[in-house]
Image (cartoon, rainbow, N blue to C red):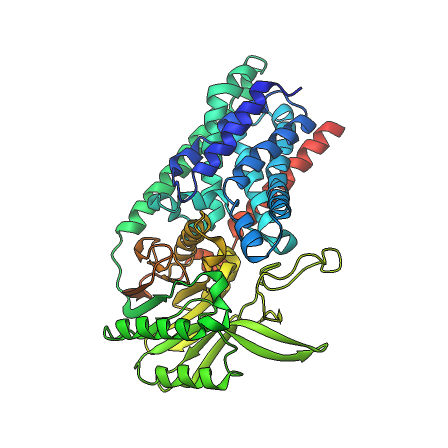
Length: 514
């Protein structure tokens, strides 16, 4: 039976989790945020636990992805009530993972002699991995991202990925819960022999935390060489409704040219414009295309920009790609990357026959065609790959670019969709973990912000404000750190958590039957 106290405790956990993420950034709260929720599950059956988990998850995700309403209402032209309902539906979907966690946690907690610190982090990581891939994937607000400012802790991500950071946070929550609430109630019912898991688990967790912190301090303090390459990013700052309005074409192009002229005096090797920076179909609009090429010839630098490319006519409809385009100082098109991971309803409409009233958010452009090639681009002094829009939130995508030989990552995006919400801050923070995981700098150019530079240790070198024009230049260091374990072997740690989770559940089922 769910009591009022249980509801309040679950709500408190949801609020604490949301506050741990940007822009509030009270990241220490994440280390205790789950405790009230876990206390609320004491003695509950699976169904009641699932409901409490859904409640916590709804507050957690509602507090971190509320910006979805902004995109749907202002740019999808979906009525406010429908936009709110769709945002609620997405929050409920994400809350399902917390609900599943709480149901499994409650089931194992009642039947296992092991304390929560053993199985809680394994369950949590398994469900975060599932969320990363299920239904095209939406790994936003993974718990590990809340720690992007806790540099000494997140360094371990070059071994475990972001999931290892989530594991540590949940394990600490579980350990405090065990010591303060659950285990004292349970220990008197146990034979002396069965009491060993808690002290052993606490000792093991202490070793893991000590290793992670020591490793992080060592990594941050290790001074390694590398090569310098100067890069500039441009932030044009155009509202979403202006992006494809033909009356703003000249202003947009002139703004990017003006800001680029400002940084060219600093002799960067590469200048980066954001996603769909040019407000026309590159190559098809001959006059504007020629203007950009001629402008590039004066820069004495490589120019990378986001643009739309025509991919041909199919089923009596033109198809396009959302691409990053690299021009040489001579104005030649030398490399193109076509975005692989499309945004549902932003670049294509899934299940269109079932939701005919929902249109694609990008007006005036046909359907986008996904790319398939993990492209690595070459400029003098280094190699890089581009992630477009929310591709940066997928750990394995960035890792594949690193695996193919990129020296640094460039992410170009148009976060004008999100307005003045928490999303641009959260989007930027996610890039910090990609830098650490692959031990390479990340260069970020965003139409309305936040643009900036992150080094291979996750330190933010510089960043722009939100909804301002800006042009930043930094010397990033490439090849300063050897290829990371994560880049080589991927989500091995996460897969071990999944296997452990399956074994825990299988063992429990076997024990019940026998």
